[in-house]
Length: 257
Image (cartoon, rainbow, N blue to C red; front, side, top):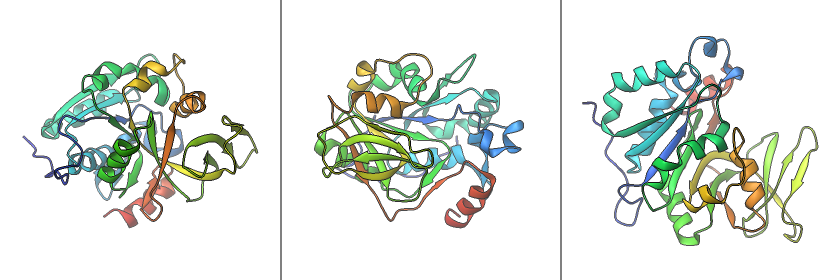
């Protein structure tokens, strides 16, 4: 059995039994030609696939119950995990056929696994690499107890989330097209942040979402943000790479040995 890295969480950190979901079902069209014959989640960074790096990241923070959604070349991900004996943890596969359900639909499909533990759960994209302190994010969520807490930074991005002065989600903006969606008209001055792709979510959110089929979890957050608290967690200064394009693989290899 392949042993996982020793957890970093100490007393007062992420509780044992906390569950996580890694989104790995996407088509990865921006990462062609690699994704013509492989799933994006297995793209290597310094010889180690993205999915492995993020499973090990979760393990370092004490998370040992993980569901991975799959669609594009799903068999390759299953084979990879079996070859590594699921990294010695409780690992579940959520397969999406005949088409991927995007982040929101994928989350709802895996809801039975995520709700099996009564506390908050962690969600992250397989193609994001970051040195965000996940334990600190989790503890911030527990301290404020919103419906969800989203890790964000002030880095450049064409699409940003808009937060009020108390870091409550209030809107979304596409800076390239000018499209904007404000969901809390009385929120006051709003501040743009780029989403890191890591969240801590209350199980109650799964029962609040009104959408079905394939949809973005960001759209669901915006649907709910007026009547529920969705918070941002500013971790500016941490390393974040969206490994979505061949050029970003080079950046990731420079920052994540």
